[in-house]
Image 1 (cartoon, rainbow, N blue to C red):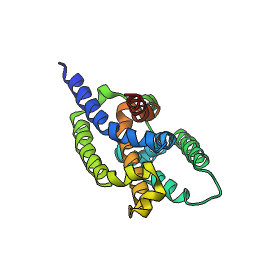
Image 2 (cartoon, rainbow, N blue to C red):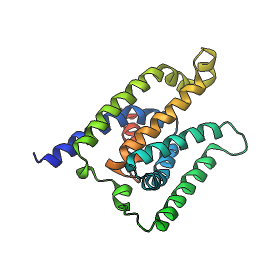
Image 3 (tube, rainbow, N blue to C red):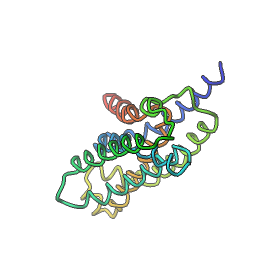
Image 4 (cartoon, rainbow, N blue to C red):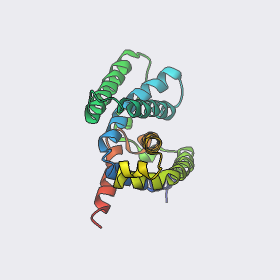
Length: 206
């Protein structure tokens, strides 16, 4: 097997193993649009990476964390519904990212690569980050798993039973944000939500 195919297989397998469990909670918690919002906002993370002269993945991860925390706090207000907030942040960040890239005369960004991903272009360092970071994310998910399952059944009942509902909700949003950031280079902005939602939704039938 060619080395670039081996890297693609190792990276794709590592990402799939991480996306599977998180995809279940994305479907159970009806967070598909949240993942889509993070994916669209990631373009602004690319701009952040260019501005700070760091790896784009770091910029995307930082921006995804900010968006997740912002949504977590904004959902506590009662003036706007959650889907409205997601729409505002999603398309606002996407538009801001496109305008910022257009204004950066010296920026050389392969937009198609970030929109659709390029699994054949990842290196062994990317594979190591996917597997190592994925293991950390899965351990973190396991720590809040009982609370998240209780919340899926009934949030009020979970709170009565002593589960830290608000903290678990925020932790899940942050972890999903990091999964989206990790997946961006492999599957791209347009397909990252599909990676989370479609396998989990399909598995529900079995």
